[in-house]
Length: 77
Image (cartoon, rainbow, N blue to C red; front, side, top):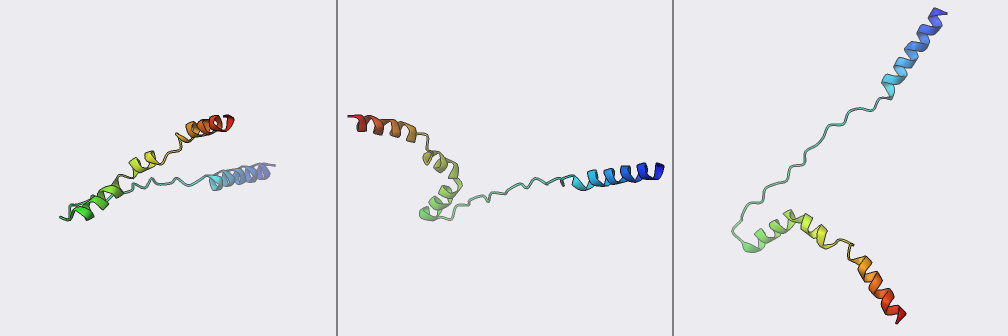
């Protein structure tokens, strides 16, 4: 009886240890610093690439709900 109980406890411990998810390391993304090249066109492209967040705001779909409401008003006329 003790051997059976001990083997069940060992199996449970092995099961618990085997089912744990590994800890993921956080990866820090490095953004390269843009340096001035002396040419205005090249520098403008570098600055545009670093300002992606402003482009995401410009392409947002928040204003589409207002557009839909306006189109339904036009259809009801």
